[in-house]
Length: 570
Ligand code: GLC
Image 1: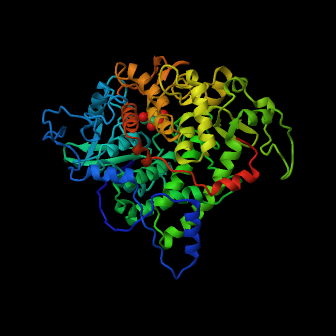
Image 2 (image 1 turned 60 degrees about the vertical axis):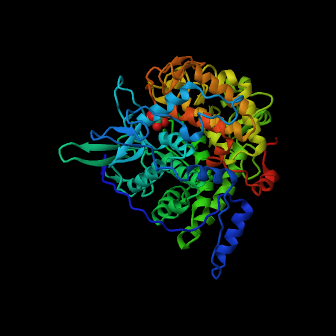
Image 3 (image 1 turned 135 degrees about the vertical axis):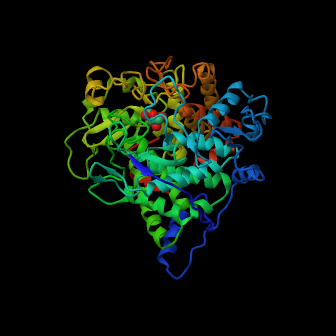
């Protein structure tokens, strides 16, 4: 464990940035980059939703809670701790009462979310992973970077950006800490998986303790943390209209350090990012090593966000150029080789193997015999998805929810592919949503395969936890994807399912079983991201303009290049 003492410094450098960049704009930027004489001047254009959000937060106090003498917190408006949740998001006055009615769970969820707040030297800096006193804490008493994302979005949507800013600055300071596992030093840009506030009652001091993988079960560094950090920085900037945080030299450097890790040149033959098993939400051995979809989609979204946030100064320019090239290559690769629909499945089924040279159709030498039986039934006539992993003689055909939703939000998926993914979710609703949204991964791996792939992991038995378990947190991602593709009714259907049980079951971390009917074997109760995921889903459905915080429109310039040589058709 690294002991880190953190204090916040703020630097209010002011410069405008664009909020949505197309390939044409990137090309323009690049051509300007080569012209050393001309200074760049990219004007920020605030969208309507952005404006309404920042106006909503105008004149409001930074956060409606403060500390009691005993270090517990209370709400300013209600000293007895009783909160009027969602006050600022208009939950008490829904905009379209016929369509959207305030559910009693919303108030309860806000209360839980505020109870989960973690303070450092008097400031809220994050939310604890779970508040379940009945189970052993392990690391659930920490603030996880990935877990905080839905909490952060809920606070941003509610006009409370301060906690998000504090979190971004604290984790940035943690990034600069020296990270070692035994005698090996990790890359400078690695962001922590989680951190914790340590109170010393004798000296009355507080310090932060971070975990970069050196304490994590399996000792794996969180590749997703850095990407989520960049994505959140953009969400903060978009929601508040305040670009000064992203423009701080510290934030610019933090971004560059993260990008250096994933844009470095090596032995790679693919633009996708090579990863160890368990380096993301699925943080245990689950056969997601290689090129997992979750990381590739987050990588793509983070690159697009970074492109919008990076300054075009001497250091930033080089990164903008590298990002633009990588985005082109990455989208081509993903859209061509990770995409699976009926036609593509049929093509693979008929593949010839052992082809050599650039004329090969079966480029990765996939053996048709490796196609799992379930995939033939699972694939609907209309629909498709990005499969779990593609590498040499390896296609992992499993469905992963997070990666596919992020592919829609980031526009890694073309509009046609996005529609196809939603078609698949709707056709396979029973399998993917069942009685509780939403399967993190489908289907479960069983018996011999489970032994080989998970290493006999008793937490990841079939249809449990990461191995086919259902995770309520994914509700916000599904909702966002539904809104982006114009299918709010599917989101509503999933939310209504969650509302039948989530609160009664005390907000479990995950559910087990083919239909997600049972509270997970080792699931924590009062899991914060289950609470926050629900709130974000509700708020987004109520006000779809919130989508802009986490979604980017398609970069139209990428399409023609793809159409020329892509093997799939839609
Ligand atoms: C579990 C999840 C991981 C999450 C952590 C804290 O380990 O797999 O994704 O970040 O719990 O909730």
